[in-house]
Length: 367
Image (cartoon, rainbow, N blue to C red; front, side):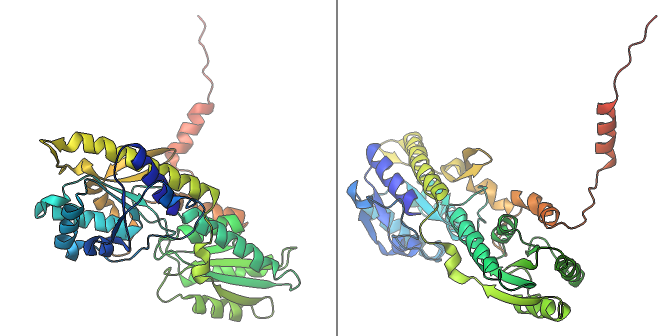
């Protein structure tokens, strides 16, 4: 997040803007905790982890009057919000507040920054790569600790709320035998299959196993439950150890990808806001109330795109803080393939017909 703040402040200054930073999120914005930053103020921020400005999970809905007063007092013309799912919901609340508060009719851009990677409108969030690297290296160290102990299974709990991105991708990277997440419901039958698979695995050359579980994968099948089940069913074949990684997995210094990604998004966001300000300038003042004036700036496949908040609000499961469509769920079958489960490749009839038609060679008729 610091890399994004640094690049946005410096690019903003080159565009001729006066840049203010807000301490402690929306609450700080309501209380007027703003500070003007210059070029040197953000020097050396690229490699710093966490957020120097401070973050809070407070939403702006109940502070709309105070936020409007702050915007009016400091003469703010555009707003860049860097954060996770709360930043997204906060953006929607500020958008709703435009009907009663004219001061909120300014261009707004949200940059997704959360280890959970659960913000709609972006395939990746700032910080998710750092967390993923930390989890993978921790899993490798935990597996290495069993080098002298044969037949041991590790059950590791990862963060991410209801979003299973970290558990799934870390499972692929660290070579997990299973990864339990909320989006892919599992039953006691699935747990039983995994235990039997591990029992069979212990008879081969690799005598250790790794199982990942997302923190909110299931209310009843908790980490303790899975640990007890594996310990009992694997008695005499393997023993178990459990690890709850906790806040260490959020990582220290950001990875090169996150530093680069944060810098790119911060710079692009300010350029987009500058263009939006030129469009919204009428009769000596800024007035922006179109849906396109409040957007999420995120990465979609290989391009960085702006998407209006109003379009994206229908693509979320607000109760579980999840986007309804998540690209990485398609990679889940690879977990079983890499763990050497017997997976049948199901081909639909239409796909099979197309394959047959493609293979068939045309024969020219000769008179």
